[in-house]
Image 1 (spheres, rainbow, N blue to C red):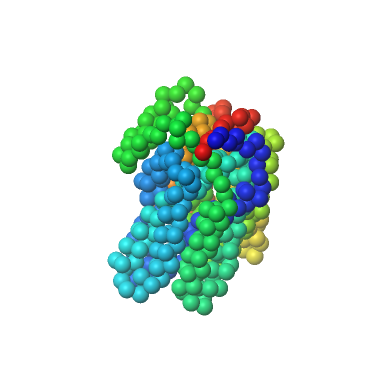
Image 2 (cartoon, rainbow, N blue to C red; image 1 turned 90 degrees about the horizontal axis):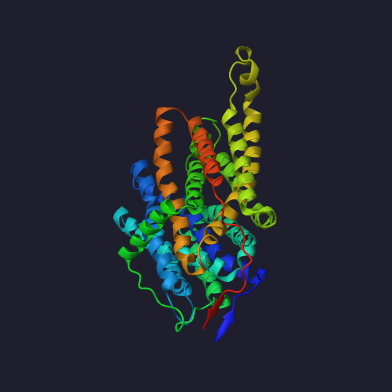
Length: 441
């Protein structure tokens, strides 16, 4: 029996699919918010805490290319991606719920639970995201990615507001609630989404092993360099650079706020929360804009918005003796009561720019390759983004140690400028009118 791939995006189905990203985003937001507090309770250094908190990114780089390629070649009655969700999500929820109880024992037991939880999450992260291009035609993928990221943003905000209340009541409650939410959200995807299944008779099943996946990854990277059309190479480099810029803000803005702007950690967190809130609100419009004027143009607009906003933030400094200031220096050295409000306004606008970028980038990557390689190249997308998350924090930390806290904002601006330069060389990745692709069961 041959089933023709859908020619139009189903919004109800896409919202259900978004629950997969909702659960993942909720878990990671809770993880990043409260696990460092648990780790510091063992009186270890902040550097070691930071290293432990990069386990998810390191495992993403190591495992996700393999998982992505493996899911491409998987053939089961329930599809290519669902087996990984069926295994990874329950295990991830179980180990996540075990973190606060492991904390009662010793740090070694807690680190073991954290590692197991990260492995379980890595098992289904790429496959659940690869479901979107599996189910949605090319021309609608920016809109679909907007819906999915809206759901992910909602999960993060829910973790931020509700998770904090639960943590104050009992430190284990956010972990228990998050684990249950992941089980429910992944169950909705498993039961309500019918993924296309490629015919076992007509499709050649390609064997994939761990070493082979990295050979495939290295081969893909070599092909990126050798290919006359460098579009895929430049979009992946752009992804690396803009996640360096974003990771810098995510990791160090709270320190920048408390140590340099002299605001409370709560105020700095709220400022980042406003950035995330605007990203969530603008996720769906960004997808429609990408479909209307083109993904590349939308990403360029987003980068220009971010560069402008962060440059303005970098120019806002603490007011000194105004009698010694003149010209531009006097213009940007404003009273402390107003400066942080201005920074919050610029971060809100920057959230719009981040929405334009993030919503349209994954569709560009998957539309540069054939349908049978979507999972592998979803893994490539995460490979470059997670490499940025590994490289940027220690690099920026060293820059801050040598220079000063404002240097982290300037670093972020330079990273987004590098991404803008890369995206200018991208010539492919726009939506394609190719609804005749077939899948079979």
